Length: 187
Image (cartoon, rainbow, N blue to C red):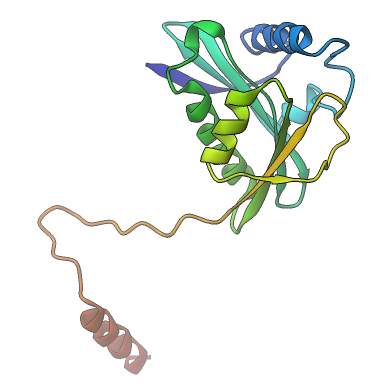
């Protein structure tokens, strides 16, 4: 079972190790890649209220990580999403993506918000994942020299959940209307 937590800083383990592994793997795919080139993903970008970095651990070992960076009011970017090789093929990329969406929702507060991200031409699994989760391709929004595909998704607030207590019959629409009218008359 994967346990997800917010990292207080990306300068310490386990976040630091995940980001280093991300850099090594992406650097092998794209010659000249450096975490210092392209759009920022600084330590400060992943500290609230600007953002957050999530770490997934399985049996005490870091297995996945990724960050949410606030770009503006209601606008976020997912950065440095990474699943270690031993964790691949288990749905952890999707789980991480959905957890990052929840973190962006928490940071955004009420109302709809937009998430953006990019990926490179050699990261086909990432592209397929993002498209399968409702992200759509957009134009280059950040000038990342190593990216070839950019994505965006508008996320709407979740509908309020109805709480139904065991043994208690929910009120019908007519009953709710009658109670509302009675409350209005009593004022």
